[in-house]
Length: 152
Image (cartoon, rainbow, N blue to C red; front, side, top):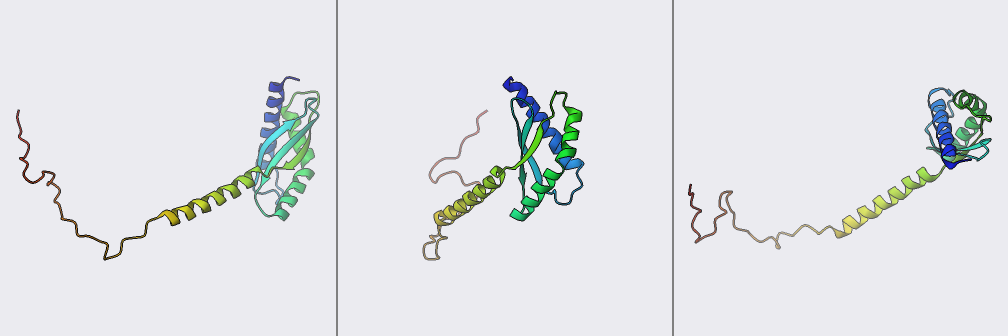
């Protein structure tokens, strides 16, 4: 099968699954779920749906189990949208990419803060402060120089 057709079918699977999970499933175990991507086999009989679930390991397991139990209903909704000979059998997989990216971002943020603290100069002590002569706002003219003339 042509790759662009597989991509289109995978996108329809991702869209229908995400809409169904977000709007139609009322299972309290299904919370903080993001459908990240879907992969369809070339024969269109199987689809892997990757989900990102925010929460503890226990909450992730419970949510995945609830999604697996709701698979029949989700496949029914998918059958209403797809006009193919076969409706893909859905397999839900945990996608840890989003969670890993949050962890990497937190590590980078801590490193950056540590570098900023070590690179920040200490404020000058009172003995290091040298009195600077005060200038008024309009005193851009140096001493001994004549003011600019206005010629029209």
